[in-house]
Length: 482
Ligand code: HEM
Image 1 (cartoon, rainbow, N blue to C red):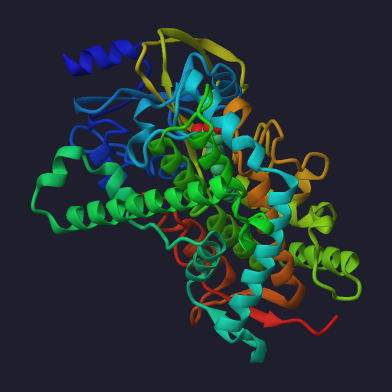
Image 2: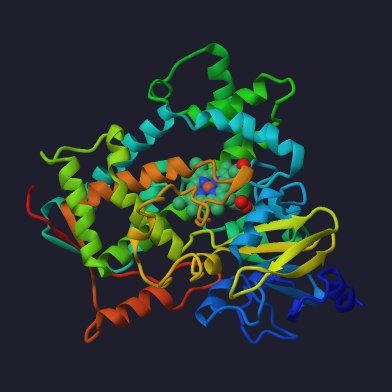
């Protein structure tokens, strides 16, 4: 019956029939299988696997995933036209209801009307003052990194796992330890916390500790705001985001946050860029190491903007177009958030597009509750929009390198687009300028390995359930003083 009603819910759209749904929590544990039938499920690395296997089979840009045992029915959508339509119609395609399971209700996951309240509270914090601070803080963390790693005495440093460096750097910037436990928390049903399983108990304890810590921080902040005491962090604007959120708890009224909402929103601000920003740095640096001529263009831009070799200021941000084009192109090829998730709020029709022409093929009826997975990997490699899609070509953004460009989905689109886009770009730009001004990034080949093999090893193989690139090994070689 489950299979039959599932097929009906997606209008018998062809696709995968499997035991557990694409978004069923425990499915995330299973390895992605392209030949997924019966006992396998598409897993959360599916869009990458499918892309590497030459894209989704079939003539249209939508496939269905219908489980016969457990989990929800979903469709995976892979055309720009459909994705734009879905993101524009947020009343029909809203955020998934299950999205708040990890941290509680917050601006990233909340649905419908309450979202306006959350966004209204958080929005003002993302001001010029904050971005100026992000720039300064990024510069300081870069200097600390050089210090701690002892690079100032080196002519050349080899980094076997780039991610370990960039994640540490970002964690330092936003002042939290890496939260590796999030995936376990996400996939563990509440009832499982009573089981005598050490790993689950440890994760529960870690999260409870974080929540208690947050409650204490909120109480402290409330007192400081009430007594109008100004700390040196306040003077520098370091509490901008946190203050906005805590004030919404104190002020009461129509836009008030309760304590759980304060915690959830503060944590989401800490976590939203925690994986995505370092992954963007990694992909960009790996591609610049491979495409040396593109790296030289970046270096030329830095030299032009900072002819005397001075440190860059936030005011220089707009001058680093070449860097931002490279970042955008790296995010096109390796979107850190490769899938966006929506839920159908009431029965609706969606025009399925033809894979080759992009024209409307036919209308599909989707039932309320169907999950919709927006596949950014495929739309970012669609030759209709990106000729030679596999090539790293920052120049394709020459006329349109705003990350809100129509064809670029890396930061989402429409009302629910990323609130931290400028924050992330500020941090990324500052880090890249500081690094590439003084150092050339090169591929670090294993013995007997060619550049092509390196590219295959670190940029395409072993892309796993968490959408990581495999360990990227690079070398930084000091440039001559400018
Ligand atoms: C390179 C880094 C980043 C990438 C690739 C990224 C990507 C995205 C994407 C794709 C969305 C839209 C999700 C959807 O439509 O379902 C989003 C939303 C969001 N992002 Fe980011 N993000 C990044 C950095 C950040 C940072 C640094 C912050 C906070 C400081 C942040 C906070 C948020 C929030 C709060 C939302 C939800 C906005 C809403 O629904 O109103 N992001 N992000």
